[in-house]
Image (cartoon, rainbow, N blue to C red; front, side, top):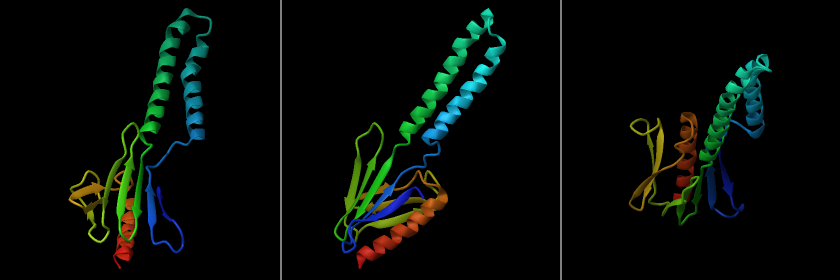
Amino acid sequence: MPYNWIQKAPADPAQELRLWPHQSLPPRGFAAFMLGTFALATLPLFVMLGTILMWGLLPFVMLALGGVYYALRRNDRDRQILEVLTVTPDDMRLVRHDPRKAAREWHCNPYWAQLRLHPDGGPVPNYITLAGAGREVEIGAFLSEDERMALYGDLSDCLRRMAH
């Protein structure tokens, strides 16, 4: 699952939840994909070695490879999202770190916090929100539908424990 709970100390009731989107293309996979794409894209050029036509096609092949490289790197940078939910008996704080943006923060008392599951009507199925202190914020929208259901159960249990 692309989230995990961290308990500060065994006697400390404070818990921290970290959520991140799937990183489906690890560095080795990226290198293998780029090498394979380069090999397949340049394969037709070997037939044209020594001809003027090769020099006419080479810039377009390199431009296409550069575009694929840029698109994959940009996607990787855009997926560097981290949501950190810290829950203590007195405070509940959610901080979302987005690439190229300032961190966004929400907090309220966990006793008054309301966890809501929206099965439909949200941007994604089983949309999860936290409401409190006059605001409603989303959490884990980048997770899969099953992962959001598991997260909802975990958050419900956590809020129930903090309320008692």
